[in-house]
Length: 148
Image 1: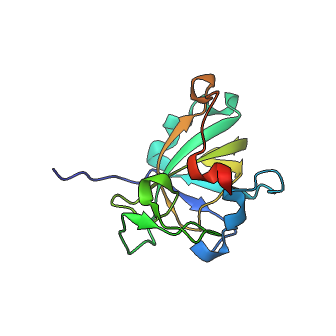
Image 2 (image 1 turned 180 degrees about the vertical axis):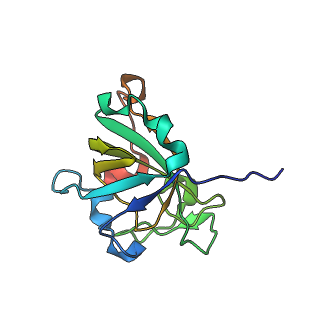
Image 3 (image 1 turned 60 degrees about the vertical axis):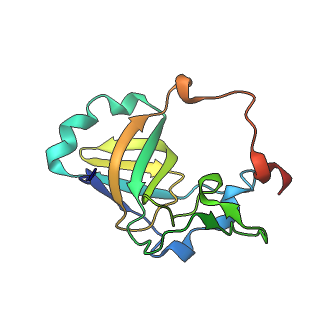
């Protein structure tokens, strides 16, 4: 089975390379200062943004386009122990798909200004979904991250 994705847009970020993204934010959300950026949606997909302004947060699916490696284990930042890649946010995965949640600040035509960006400049955007109350989960467990 061959699966192909067509980017619907591109990320504009202050982060130029993966190493520029602060790793501490994964574990320390209290002192994390959200970073602003933009999602530029290609003109052919702009109609799909209709009514998006009513949502405070968006789920962004994107490609880890700079990852050239594939691993089934990963070394999370600030950790000495190796974890299974599916228990981490590592970009070195069998399928180079990433997901993040951002706050929508405003829409200006095909540009979405967002806060909480953790993608690098030029990252291909694969899909956008509204973050809804259905996505909010209670009584979650954080696995090994709870011990960090």
